[in-house]
Image (tube, rainbow, N blue to C red; front, side, top):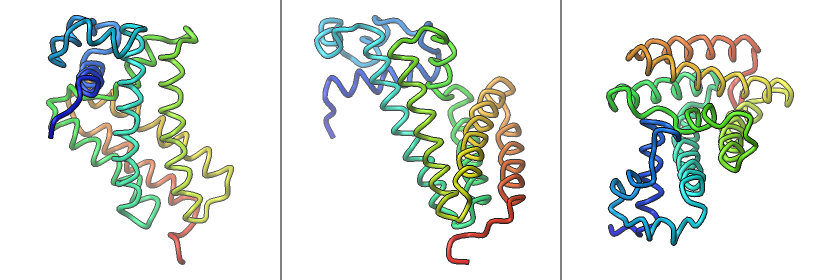
Length: 195
């Protein structure tokens, strides 16, 4: 299937951000990786590198939201669903040779305190993922405040464990986080839907 030049630019930028962060990604490299001209990049993204990165983070956020949603839906039990998420993240990270981490985390850390559009799109991504987890927990009967706090804990722990797994080139941090998060979710004593 043929992809548009704009889509190629966004996807290539998303992959570069995953592997080397925002600061380490240059506009010429984006052009080269996407097989696009600099003129095309500025045509689609007049705001330059930050505008391309914002679109790439939105793309990556949707891509991860789909993976997260699928993992959460794969298990009726909320604890097993969280465990499934961490297992899938660990497998994907290992398969990539430990290079395809979360582009949102890298970009967010590099733009802390800037109040930029890039910082905002990173916050939106993390908040959106938390909503997916919260909705799963709410659907399983968790009280609203517990579901909200647990969702924040799950996403925060998964993000941190992913970075630790990358640095150590090991699945263990993600798998350990998954087991502990599942234990935490179970500790609330809230059953699966329909029970």
